Amino acid sequence: MSAPTAAGTELWFCTDPAEFLATAGEHLAADPVVGTVVATVAERMARQQADGIAPPERVWWLVVRDAAGAVVGAAMRSAPFAPYPPFLLPMPDEAAVALARALHGRGEEVRAVNGALPAARLCAAELARLGGGRVDVAQHTRLHELDELVPPAPAPGRLVAATGDDLDLVVDWFAAFAGDAGEQAGRPRGATAHELPDRADLHRRVRDGRVWFWVDEDGQPVHLTAANPPAFGVVRVGPVYTPPERRGRGWASNAVAALSARFRAEGHRVCLYTDQANPTSNRIYAALGYRPVVDMANLVVVR
Image (cartoon, rainbow, N blue to C red; front, side):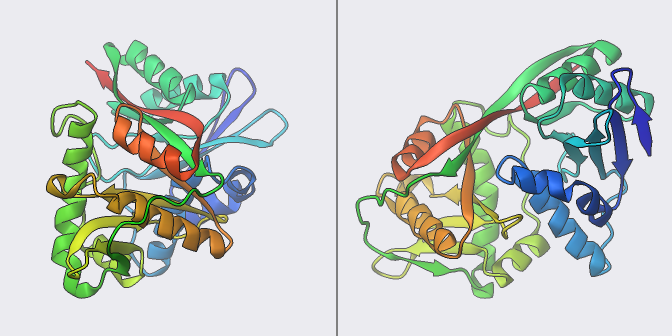
């Protein structure tokens, strides 16, 4: 479905991730680090759809075209957690405002917007104006890309891939990450919406070799790092989780450094997200050689 705007841009909605990738792929490939979340989610859902797993009915994809027909932005609504926020990549200001009006006109209830600034902020502000209410910031995030890897001080232990026998621990630590990350940033536990771990999805990630542990000298897991499959030549690392009682021993730095080096050796660019309010993670990744690319935000429309 297409919706022209007063400024001459066009909003094109679709529900097929493969169709979206065929239309927006060149645009995503032109800046694959900034587009990493949309690209990896679209590719994952396209693979699942090819396997007969249909996406939820609420999921949509958006391509923004300018007056000449060139793709100048993209977005999606695919989050599996309430309140199911759309995720916006950079787009012209007028397109972000027009998207809010289109969603309002479609009768979609949108209580949160995530993604690149200023697009996410402009869209959320217009949604609040149309429906009444205000926009609050739930979380400021920052996307980083690895520049020159700076090896950390060595820590005892080694990196190992998780196996099916580790699935219970993987599920527990993914769930713990969502709560602990907010607390480290000074927010109440559960104040920020996160994707809850789905056991079937985590089983697929483990099966595909996308989850690793750092094990100590006794072979006991003390830290978890995961990563998404490469999309347009970019691998996104995360989550990165160390239980509270095991922090401060260099395991996270060593695990992320080892995986970053591995992905680089495979020819991929490497990126990751941080919570801007978490000084520990920002300091660790900066020391490893990760540099800021773009600021993003998770916004809530409060009515």
